[in-house]
Every structure is written in C-alpha cells, then in structure tokens.
Length: 413
Image (cartoon, rainbow, N blue to C red; front, side):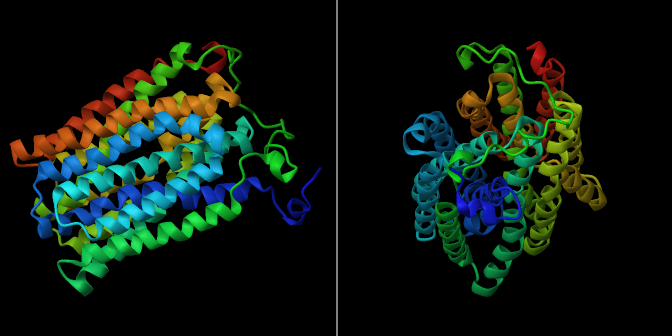
C-alpha cells in the first residue's frame, strides 16, 4: 500500500535519501576525516607531534575504517542500514568530543581509530542506499550528489577552524573538535528521521526504473554466484586501492606542506583547502553523470589523469600560480571516483549484492588509505620535504590509469 506521506512530496523520496545521505557523508567523511588536515598544524604544534606521528594518526583512522567496512555489510543486513548509520554517527560524535580533551599522541591515536570505524560503518551503507533507491541509469549521478558532502565539510573546516584558532589561540583546536562533534550529532538526528532502507517502505519503486528511454550502461548478465569469483571486482578493487593511496596523501598533507614548506599562513592555507571543497561540489555530479554517459572506464581514466597532474604540480615546487592549478585539478575530481565505483559494482554484480561488493572494494581501498599517509609521512621526514610524497602519489595515479584501461564493459565481464 502506498504511503500517504510519499504522495505529498512534489518529487520522488529518493531525493530525500540523497540530501540526507549527503549530510551523512559530510559528517562521517568530511568532518570525521578530511577536517583533520586543517586541524593538524595547530594540534601538532600544541602537542609536539612529529611528521611520522601525524601520519600514524591518519593511518590509525583508516585502520578503523578498514575493519568496519569488512563488517558493516553483515551488520546492515541484521540491523538495517539506517540504524547502523545512526549508531556510527553517534560513535563519531563521541570520539571527536573526547579528542578535544586528549593530551597526547596515544589517546588521539586510539580515539581517532574509533572515529575511523564509525566513518566506515556510516559511509558504506549510505552509498549502498543509492543502489536500492535509484535505477542503474542514474546511479552515477545520484551517488555523485551524495559524495559531495565531503566538499561542503572541507569548505566549512577551511573557514571555521582557522577562525576559531585565531579567536582562542594555540588550544583552539580543542574547541574545533567540540564544534565538529556537535554538528555530527545534529546530522545523526536528521538521519534517524529521514533515512529509509528501501523504496517499498514509502510505497515506491526505485527512481528511474519506470523510465527506460535513457541510454543506459548495460547490466552485467553474470550476476549469479559469489562476488568473490568475479575477476572484474578485483580489478575495480585494485584501482580503488590506488585512489585511496594517492588522494589521502594530498588530503592529509597539503595544508601542512603549504604552511611548513611554502610559508603560507594557516588562514591562507585554509583558503586553499576551502577552494578544494568548493570545486569538489561539482566532482561527483559531473563525473558521475559523465560515467553514466561514457562508461565507467572512460570516467575513471579522465579522473586519474587530472589527479596525477594535481600531484605533479604541487610536488615540483613551481610558482604559486601552479598551486592554484593543482588545487583546481584535485578539487574538480575529488569525490568522483567513489560515485563511479558505486555505480560500477552494481552493474558487475547486481543490485542485491552491490552493498557487499562495495564493502569489499572499499576494504581494498582502505588498505590504500592505511599505506598512503604513513609511508608519505615517513618519506617526508627522511627527505625533509613532502615533494617526494607527492611525486610518489603521481606515479601511483599513472598506474591506476593503466589498470583502468583493462576494465571491460559490464556485458563483456
């Protein structure tokens, strides 16, 4: 029976899921992870953290993320995606609040590890909801709008964090953690109210399933069997690993590199980071839609090419104008690969197995995130510069382009 509430809306409830999902990504990834880059300079100065310790804090977060993405598919089947997402956001809120009271490397490492677990436990089910609420013809676009939540968080953190630090002083990072925790708590409440696990709960069908006039990317004919026997899924996972390894090096260390090596003030570096956030608002929708039209392979190759250019431009220590170009290349494609991957896995394994498949490649992606910041941090400490780390990221992005060239269309997989 149709839900009377659904009929009152002038649009499909799937778009409510998208908006709420965008807020959830803002909280679990944008604030739970990407705000760290803005907080690190003042935290490191206040607590006397080394480059290696900064890298290991980020790595600890990703280890927690990795563990949770392995488990969240099974947990979501038992609890439902909405309940798991809300619990995860509450965990993020609590640990961020506790970090504001921490006084040493060990405490922050443990708490940020738990934050990472919450990030993974919220992110994967949120993206999985897209496969349930949208037909395959527009999943790339829908997922693209969800992932830009991280962009909004970057804009917020780039402006808010330096302002609070200026007002409060060296310990302003503690107040910033509390503010971010409060925002996550509000978003957890919104998720509880508006998220729904399936269209059937609103008496609806997935958006786009009744309109087949669009030119769709073909659905794989081989949806049967275990996802772990699907060779293409391992290729996607390898590509996703390289994305995780490279993008997080830039996200974690670009602000620190600008402040420590280029002599920028924290406020100016924050403006750079805010530009990443602003440009990234276009990344998911534009490249998600592009992959709907051109195919996932072409979309991924274009994105990795722009990312490789971004890493090279900042690594080469060119005049400041090239930093703007680097920020532009990185920002305009920042969240496009997750949106393309969400759409791709559903085409190769089918909608019913999409959550498990996305969780699996996100696990592989997480291995890249664990490796990237720790290796880059150690490399920067040994060489005395982050240039070597950014050059390494560029080389790995080139490898991703090569791997993507072997990706076949779903009906050929």
